[in-house]
Length: 180
Image (cartoon, rainbow, N blue to C red; front, top):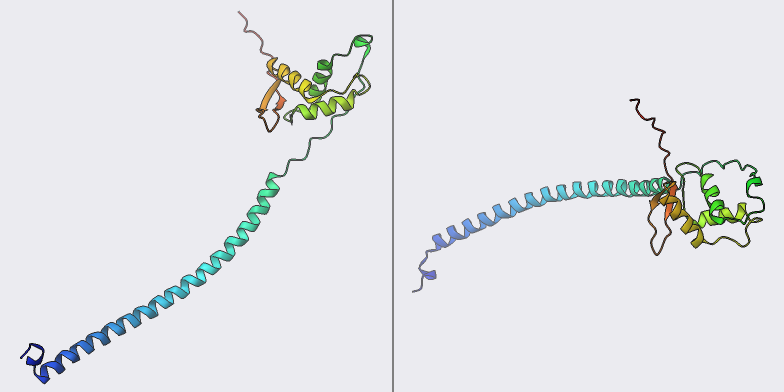
């Protein structure tokens, strides 16, 4: 006789009842866990939806705020144009670098500018005095010389894809020598 048939009917019933009780216990445990997990899942799903709505609203507001912050500040008020006294240069050839320097001197403190803007302003202001319009390259050379002379500061270095930007150098207060 084999081992499986050596068990009595009572032993078989007892073993089967124990297995059935164990499986019932495990099924009840897992059903309880399933209910708990379902509750937790429902809670987290609701929280996830609420956070997602707030996140989307925040992103929309943040993007709009960033765009507003990125917008350029209003330009400084225009500098009143004065009539220039040409008496000292009357009859002399026009020095384009001097005209460029005059345009730069009239720029507002803290304002950034490049060769393109200065060329356009020089051409606009002095169109009657210039033999031909000033180009960006000539202005760029003049701006570099003004920087080297300490009258301008480099705000952004020029690259192949964008021009250099300058700003007027901060004026240093006159320092009186100490008395001996």
